[in-house]
Amino acid sequence: MTKSWRGLEADANAALQKGEVGKAAHLLIDAIDLAPNEAGLYKQLVQVALMAGGTETAVKAGTELRRLEPNNPESGYLLAVAAMAHGDFVLAESTLEAIAKLAPRSWQIKQAQGQVARALKKDGQARSVLEQAVALAPTEAALVNDYAVLLLEIDEATKAKDVLSRALGAHPDDAGLHLNLALAYGKLKDVLKAKVHAEHAKTSGDADVREQAARLLAQLSPQ
Image (cartoon, rainbow, N blue to C red; front, side, top):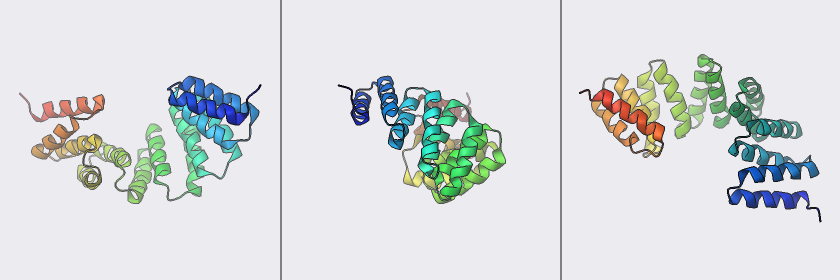
């Protein structure tokens, strides 16, 4: 007996719980064949395809989702995320610009706009939207880190320190915040505080953060 799209969706969720991401994506595609106007299936497929590394599939699903729900900011955001993962920053930029008008107080959309602007070498635009995003969500660690990295690149270490310190108050164990604070204090020639935050960052579960912290500590403590 042929399964309904709901049955295939349930099978996809079961496969996902087992870690069978590729199988889940194929089951969702089969479900969409049976229910091509069911927006929820496309939302799931975008996310599952990205997990599986299938960025082209994610963009196609996101495009159909956006067609079905042109006035839903979440649907546009999913397309933009897929486009960014696929390296299509022009599509991501135009999509985010459209949905930003639908959700002008969404810090997530503004953060994504900042990331896209950075990828397109539009740093002035990136600073503007990231500044707006941080004003809306001053303690969101990933957002503040994005903004701080840009500030550090343009030698605004004092401002970077201030926004990072505020976010760290809400997330005292966030290794990324500690690393960027260490970099900020390093630029400000406060070696003691830079070392303290670099030591915190060195305990991160992220190997890249640990390596950057170790390099910074070596620079701060020359032989």
